Image (cartoon, rainbow, N blue to C red):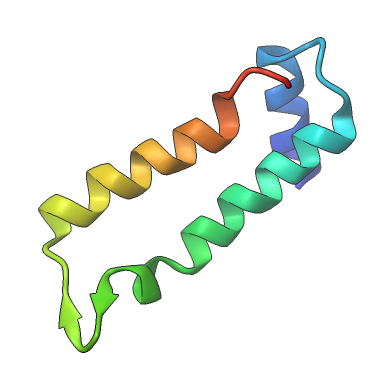
Length: 67
C-alpha cells in the first residue's frame, strides 16, 4: 500500500497522504471486486465492455483532483 501512496504522492504532491491511501484502497477494492462486477444477474459482461469501464473507474479514483 505504501508503494502506491508514494507514487500517488508524486502525482499529487499537495494531497494529504491519508487521502492518497484512501484512493489506493478504493482502487484495490475495485480490482478485487472485478470478478463480481462483470456478472449481472447470472450474465457476464463481455471483457471488451467491462475492462475499459473498470480501467476508467480505477483511473478516476487515482487521479481525481482534491475536493
